[in-house]
Image 1 (cartoon, rainbow, N blue to C red):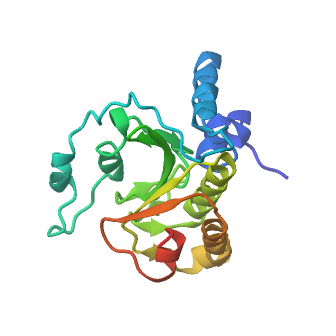
Image 2: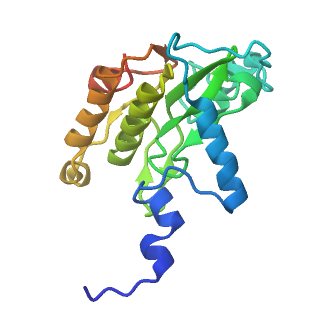
Length: 219
């Protein structure tokens, strides 16, 4: 009541894909939206007999995995882009990200590894600025990223898609804002989604992973 705001800022595509998290994807036009729908359908495993379906004509990643130590060096304490790691793991370096502009400290999306469709949940290690102007630390799980990952994991479970978790996590965010926003509730929702997920789960630890945040990443 009494607020002055334009329609796009109040409830447009950018608001619901970046701030509220209501929309999973944002596309520029109807054609892009149709292409997105095709990709989503392609990720679903409709076969009841086996959870693993394989494209035997898969192609290796475009980016070479021998570059990994140049990106992630255990001897150097520095920020890095986890998407660069993913690009050197998935077939053709093709990663279809879920809720790309929301909850950015956790990366979620689909790819193929060796011809098999997988969901990927990974910790982003960049310092990030959200659409609301909030600075978020890389490797830390916030309310929005917890919510996003929980939804994605439940989708993978429903669609019969195995999940790869890539760990480099410092912990859940603490402080007044996080507590008042319900980080305990949102973190518990993520852990609950992981615990009740029946599809195969693999954990790849590339950095730190301790305590409750280890549970949240299916440790």
